[in-house]
Each structure stands twice: as C-alpha cells, then as structure tokens.
Image (cartoon, rainbow, N blue to C red):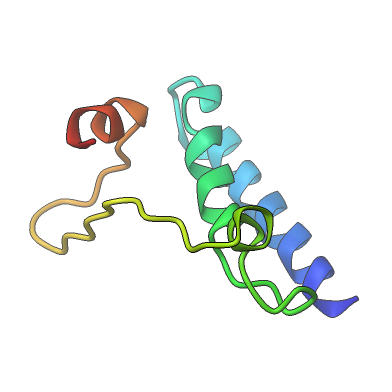
Length: 82
C-alpha cells in the first residue's frame, strides 16, 4: 500500500545518506533508525508497531535540542541519559 511504499522509500533514503555522508560505522546508528521506525504511527495498524506489540506507548526519554551545531548522537548518548 502507499504507507509501506513511503516507509520503504524513507528507509532507503536514510541508508543512502548513511552510506554517502557518514564516515562512522553505520551499524552504530541502525538501532536509532529502528527505534524511530518502531515508534512512528503506521496507518495500516493505526498505531506504532511498539504500541501494537506491547499494548502501550514507548516511554523513552528523548530530548530534541535546537541549540548549536547539529550532530548525530550514537547509542552512547542514549545509554548515558537512561
């Protein structure tokens, strides 16, 4: 369906970006992509996959910050803040 096609295209674009721009090991970031995918609303199931699987919303402390230079933080930052 259309939702699946858009999701696949988004994942392809993200992986292409990883391959072209990131000099780090992309495997360090795949868990962040998976987290974003699993906690995004999907029209086919009318909720996020995490919510469908566990029957509740994911309770993760995520902080979006607009101050300063934009950088991609890896799993280490998540481990520090949890």
